Image (tube, rainbow over all chains, first blue to last red; front, side, top):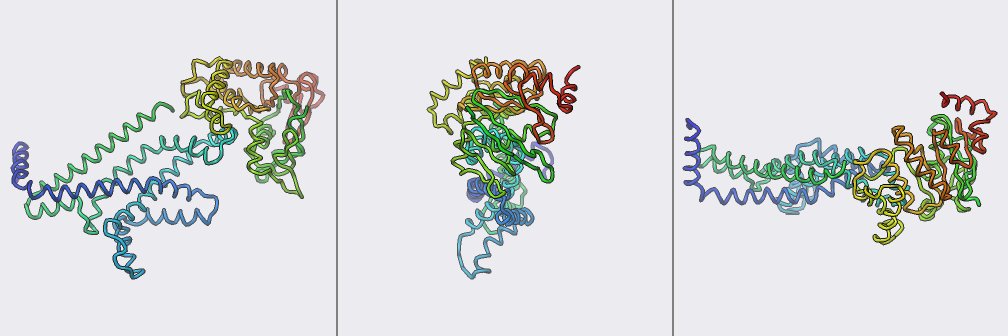
Length: 232
Length: 252
């Protein structure tokens, strides 16, 4: 169909001029949904992941065993399946209809899934902290909570930033999975557009959307790492 | 005046008996050096007293107040609040400093003053700067630990412990992680503290230093105190076979 690069770009501009009016709406709302899923998942999964990590490391097996099992299940089954399960479980298990909207189901599933992955990152960071830091804190009279919040956690955050950037970038692309519950997203918009325009250009659009989001996130993480590089 | 008393302290790690029966008393303003081969339990003794390890038997008291004591064959610790209060009467300097890398030198010294003792930030800073000047580190107040030499780190660590005004300061091999040429700057600081009558218990392999600075030297091996006495009696004129064999390794 396209022969040379200039022709390709020419075609894209012609295509855009022709279809923009019809595509802007679905793409816009798709991007908005992706951003909402992304933001809310981080908002809930970042703290929940820390709690899960602490649960995994709890001395009491009554706490640690179920938490470890939770992490195993969340990491051992597809996120897409979890989305379906969370959405349909209230009805099929409890016979409750319309317990929550599709969007809420999406946020619950994403939060649980990502909290499990985040927990493993937190755990790695916390366990990599030398014992001497805890001991120095204890000897200086800090309470256990103070030691964790003032001494351990700030250093853990620096250590987990690189693995977190990986996971957060994956989250951007995973937001495309929300369409399994019929929630709109840029990829879904592209699929629809491709089928009525007979063109792959909409796929390129959505690719650019994801790429830009990931690019921004990578930059932000680099910035964060730089800001924390004042100590070693 | 007696400040610290250790009675029949016992500690095992699994099947390995590390402290089999340690008793000792430390008087106010006394400087005690503990020497002995590696694995003799010296560090574990300090760690039991500073509550970093749980004792399996015996008792430790500070100024008559028990941190823990044995009751019907079991070690009973004081209440958490009491332990926190008593622990603040002691300080511990670690072999590898354990400074907080994410805090500046100054904040390493002020953080516990402010958030443990409840001192105002201004007063804490003043205390910290006084101690830093004593350590010869005034210009490092805003530096981060990674940029300091080992000797400087250890002096900051000593200042950090002193900032809480402990009545007795423990040193766990304070110069063992240092290059020989940095050792003396740390020893000089400890010597200065001794001259100011700070009560100190120092686990060390620096025999000459132990002889100079201590009022009493304790030789430990295999979890028991083999010999203790005036520095010259233990380090030079000991009659004990094991002490002499150990000290023989240090003479070239």
